[in-house]
Length: 416
Ligand code: UDP
Image 1 (cartoon, rainbow, N blue to C red):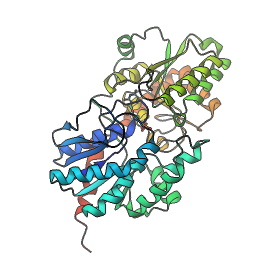
Image 2 (tube, protein in one colour):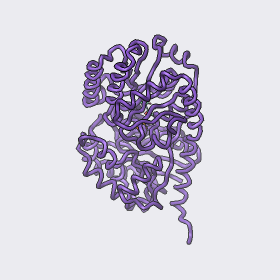
Image 3 (cartoon, rainbow, N blue to C red):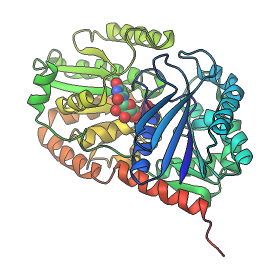
Image 4 (cartoon, rainbow, N blue to C red):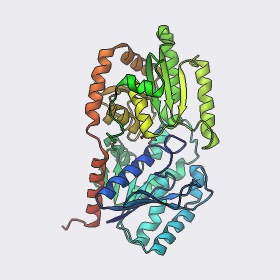
């Protein structure tokens, strides 16, 4: 079996945590790796964005990334990627023809790739599977403005893709409900396949060892945030929550630190993100958090595992989250999460069993949740044990198994 995976704007080999690269990139890399181990060949088509990425890059034997030239070899906004989709589609088709390749299924990720699948699936005569990772209508509900100017076109493409695809993968029951209720998806087409975590990378180690390794022995208590530096991740709510926390517990100043992992601090990845960090630094100043908050930039996965282990808790204040890999990775390291009651986080974190959930966008509730966990070590220990236990249910192996079964089902429809 051979699969064409489409991920126009998220290269599975990209550095994670920068602008526009996070969970989806990792998901595609891990899924391709697992499928290849099962003997399913995977070609991931993505836009050439880095000059040092060769046209063809092997992920593992049997799974490779094929970079297609479409537009400048650099970061461009999603709407600029949208304007290049015809060029990208033609590039993929030409490559496939030139190499004499044949695929059994097209598996598209995100709304941008849905447009490419719409053209190529009928041309190649193969079924298509769609996964969105986030949905335009859900994002529109929680954001004050359409920062990327993409909403209308995105939502129209999503609707059409849901209608035309043979199957739509949702990362959680909540996302499945959104597909059905907001987009009118046919429930029989929607498959819930939760994301995974690699236990070889994310597992508990002694907190003191992790802190020493990171040179962070000076922190009495440590809260961690990991993610793309975007409004949707709720990082500004977290900074405001810290302001409130110190008003209520002034003695915590100097005792407590907040590490922010993610973001391209050196501005190599586009100006907008740097602007967001500048805006966050203003909030830091406003709430007198200069001695508390440390922006440490994006970190590769192995080192990220040290951060999760060094922390007393991981804050996941997202305004929406289709799954929430960061929460799962923290939990797999035995670090409890204070997260928001949104999207996949609600199905991943069981409130008061494997973490705490608070309403999204509510700085006071977030401050209270963080304080509760920091002040009460017995609560933290109980939730840490619950988190570790909960995380055992998720693996990339299971994702691969479910996705492979879906491919088989679509290729050989059951006779009636
Ligand atoms: N990540 C990383 N380094 C960073 C920041 C993030 O490797 O500096 C990874 C993180 O480990 C997680 C992913 O990026 O696997 C973020 O996924 P999540 O589902 O939390 O958010 P998304 O980016 O999909 O919105």
